[in-house]
Length: 314
Ligand SMILES: Cc1ncc(COP(=O)(O)O)c(C=O)c1O
Image (cartoon, rainbow, N blue to C red; front, side, top):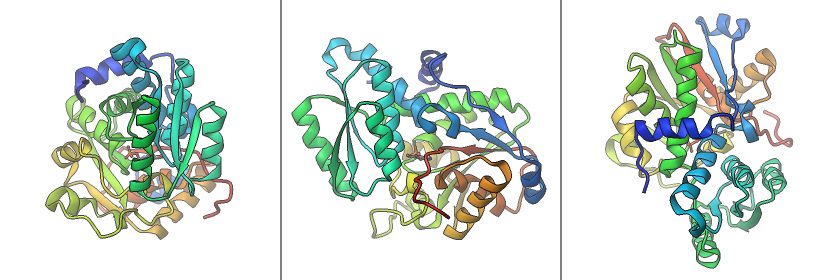
């Protein structure tokens, strides 16, 4: 079983080279003025399939292929959107069969995206439990290797390539703002940056209903099982068991909770000022930056996805 480590992150970066985009970093004067600092946007919405997820997903498919050879019959996951699209795309690149278990209430655009990459879609109920149960049933039936959306070492190691690019593209960076759902992206960013550039502070930004601070510090979770937020990429309440100790170690003191209004405000700013059509989740890190009183000199904000459901208007 592969470990989450800097060595594996470097290996993943080599594996991915030439197969994914080195996404651009852009700036916007109007937002700099508003934020009172020199903001850099890392454009992961321009990554293959429209989110950073392709980094981890392709690393997972290539890694499982290397590890298991012909014993791997295909890959399987559960996802309401971006992870499913990314895994379907990655499997198609490697000519590997793929099946995604999708909650019925997933955005149509994301379901359509998965179908385009020729994956088999199995619909399930809308709770996390529904997804996990159906995924376990499909695993028994198909015998495919499960690639969990965030609680998977290949995914986390693959996402670290985003951190490596940030360090190269913005050497003067002193802070990175990242949205947290299951915590795969955030874990990769914190761990890699701590190793390579410990002077850069990584802020985890969450919708306030998630209450990550009490989960990391006191192991306490709210009663509900899904976060009620416009940011549909990060409605998962609990960060993964693999992610929790990493986030607790590197970033428990740097969590920013934002309201729904703050997310919508940040989204409108990105749409109108930068003209980048990102999805609501991608506005969460900017909302965090705008909320922080103690401004970084050169912050990097990760625009994590661009798959906007066309029925959505903020
Ligand atoms: C656009 C977007 N941003 C952020 C996340 C959160 O990623 P993680 O679950 O690794 O925290 C997701 C998860 O699907 C996503 O789709």
